Length: 302
Length: 253
Image (cartoon, rainbow over the protein chains, first blue to last red):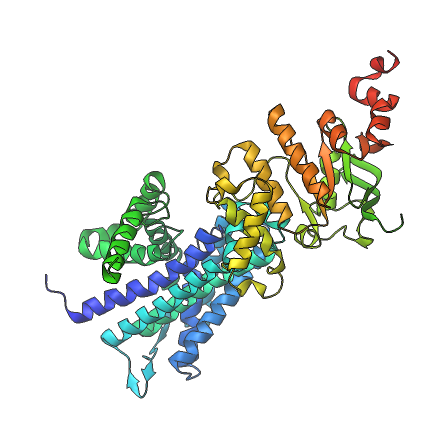
């Protein structure tokens, strides 16, 4: 089957965007241990913020994507604040509820385009040139790499350690001076911000968004990306996104049964390989590291 | 004698619903001492501990650290003010290495405000962590995950984490519970060594012989009240204490 460049560009852009959303989920859930089954809501908040900023207020894409990041950061912080005392199952249910509320707000308020959605979302321009097709793909991947670098940096900071401490044991985290509430809110806010940037990229790529693009099933899709790749990893989010986007493309009949596929993948992965394909202890990752090491060793000549 | 009280509780009373767990408990912990708090099961030892640590708010009364009130402050503030504590059942951060467990506690200076955006992987931080790990004798387990350590070593890690806070006082909640006699003696040795280095220790213990051996001063809690206090030999020969532990029949004999 010949692959047209347009088709490839579309797939790669969508992979990058959802890779960013999954990366955010890996920070909130994988690092900080805060269950979030409503990541699509933050993708929606970012997409809406970006669409409204450009279509209604004629701001540039570059301004809009910053606004999208801020809006979703704040939405994430808000979810963090309301769910401060919740853990595990109750937290999961609250985040699902949050997803539904956001979607219904988009549907019932004209400001967000209601059931018609928002059309005519412009493509970004850079130095007077419109960024479309493969250029847009390259832009998306550049943003993905920047945000992956940020995630790597967070891992090396006190913030990253506070997140892991929080995930392992909240009471012990408190006992070493970690303000659990503050870091829970930050975990949601930062993860949500990633979702918002993903939303902005998707909105300007498609040029049209509607409330149903951010419904709960998309949260499950993002979750399955995280789980397939490994919640604990950064590369995992990108690999997971690629696999979950490509599988139904390769096996067209799967398209109709996508929700079943996501669910099956989540269940099977959690049962057989809870750390994900590229999780810290996974054999895939270890052999990948070995290959990379051999490679870089070869280059350096040692 | 005026200024050498590091930690003090004044008339701490704590109700859980209608049940009174603590009643007017006043204790004083002198700088440089090892102060033991003993008492039979259900005497309120752990409740007192959790009140001091900030996990519980007292219904009435005050907790003072170097004459500053800390009652009602959340645990992370109490910890960063210099109260290091260990948990009765060692928990720690099981998925993190021994090193990261200790580094997480060294970070208390950075978790406030925006300090969290700083890198933690600096050589001076790691050096500091190694020093603490060595002090508690875990240097052979630096890279091991905390959750994989045997109980005895997990208890040491608990102490290492508390030490990383650079505490003014170290509160140990039943540090030898569940340990073999040999391990318990080793841990007691560690506590004494830390105390000789100038650290004030508050020891909550169910195991009376260990508490007697280590403590300079003791309080006995019974039914949520201070039943007796004094030097260990005074306390253990006190009639009321023997009755509380063994029942009324033994005291006369």
